[in-house]
Image (tube, rainbow, N blue to C red; front, top):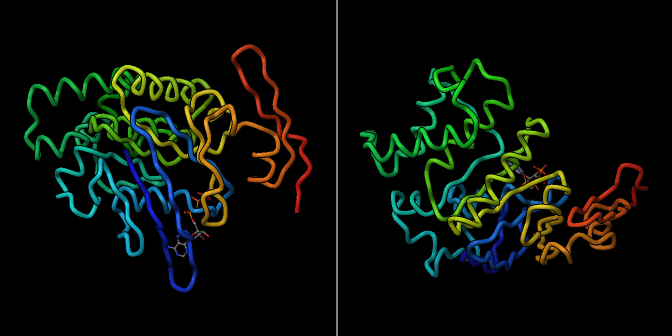
Length: 257
Ligand SMILES: Nc1ncnc2c1ncn2[C@@H]1O[C@H](COP(=O)(O)OP(=O)(O)OP(=O)(O)O)[C@@H](O)[C@H]1O
């Protein structure tokens, strides 16, 4: 479990996170939603220790994250950032291999190679295996960075807008793959998404954030309600259900002040 208590974050004079208390249960797919600037990426980068926790506590499996050694932490938790840049000339297979670094320390074993190839296959990247990263489209590159994170094979995975640049087919494949990792391997996956319909149809729980505060953490069926979403995003929603599929229609919603 990830347990966050009284977490604050300040940048300069601006308070970005205003006392977050949140428990992320194990073995679930959780979507983090909220308007631009709500603090979603800031929260993820603190959990992943890319930013230092200065006020408040984050515990991973009942241990303060600051007490983990880096190598140990990297085997527990993997983090895909919202923006990924690479100045090195690397192929797809070479970048995915970086995901194995916490285990291999640069000397890949047969097991590492097997996981790398399996992940490349699962994300349908075989045809791009030997292509250079800087020659890929935005969506292809996004899938390769995601493959690197999944090759890290950690019980906890944080993904900040992994569906960026992806077409509908690839976005659905990624969400199905994440759901599969949760259901078959018991991974805990926290995903920031802006397309609310992916959250509605794949998440076990939805966390809403607004203005640096936690607005709610609810089971998906309780979060996907016109009043809950309307209050979070300040726009009118219409919720349409058809069998097991849920659709949130906001295309003609009236903006609220
Ligand atoms: N380096 C920085 N310097 C100053 N302010 C920052 C910095 N990084 C983030 N912020 C501010 O912190 C707040 C939260 O930003 P954050 O990126 O966490 O939001 P978000 O919910 O992920 O937004 P989005 O949906 O647009 O990605 C915003 O108001 C942003 O302007």
